[in-house]
Image (cartoon, rainbow over all chains, first blue to last red; front, side, top):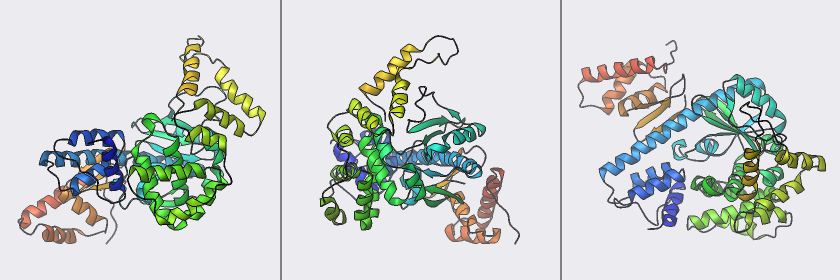
Length: 360
Length: 81
């Protein structure tokens, strides 16, 4: 049995469907390993609870234990999220909860069905300094230092708290060119509220959650390319179907429609499901407003980090911004350890990682 | 507090620190009933309906143990009758 078939089963579980295969006593451990890696353990729990297979009582009990473990992590992260939301509310920083935490509460019939590994918040880039100061005062610390000049260009800054919670503070919903194409202010203007433990939090609107999920599913590579993102696209595409035309028009205005359509097709292919009729007609239309360099960077076979860099540089608002961005690669900072030495090796390693593999 | 249901169990984030607390089926039942602001006697009735074969004394003892545990974890909110 291939992992592709197992992924199909787990994806279908995310939208309440059966088939084409179920776990058996003989291959249960492969299912567990796959679901862990792909962050879809709740879907495996659902499959284990509902499938009529030869799973042993011990294996079904393991599924429950795993789901309890996932739930424990989710409530711990949400506890941290509530603290951050309170700090930002008091500090007057508008935010939108992104990805798993938002879809868990707004799109799944039960929040237990969405696993996530960290907290992702979108803020206006103009609020980054204020947000960082508030987080530091609340006990969060920045996980790693960015190259000089790169802070205004990075799509997210990572913070850690003592409770082992990780928070990604996003200025844009995607990195590089994709982040610039989708205007953060417009996303924040259309955000919607949701309730978490009696407190009102904010998330992207449902159409924007699908656009974000689609971009994330297409642009992510390596360990960041998880089935949980594909499941978000599959689930949200069904929920947004009545407004499919409007969503594609919004995506086209931002020149990311081809990215969104690629994610929709990919999710349905992976789940071995047809594209819903509500999407077929609007997806058949010609795309007029597009960015071919961005498409080449993100839709071509294989990773093209240099093309991604070129696409990004072209979209930066001025030559001054381009010069500052490139300077971030070339300027040598002092060793952050305080030894006074030059951190040349780390800088070369960082530069190589950007042009050879790219980032998440 | 943030919570999740897993079958007939409930997982909560403790109010201080956020560490998880897993409630077994009976405690989960009490927890969900408390969300509707049921009084102690109403909780007794709920447990009697759910566990009719358990002696009343045992149910009463279990209920008070659960209430005490939730109180110790700072998970109870009180309001005037």
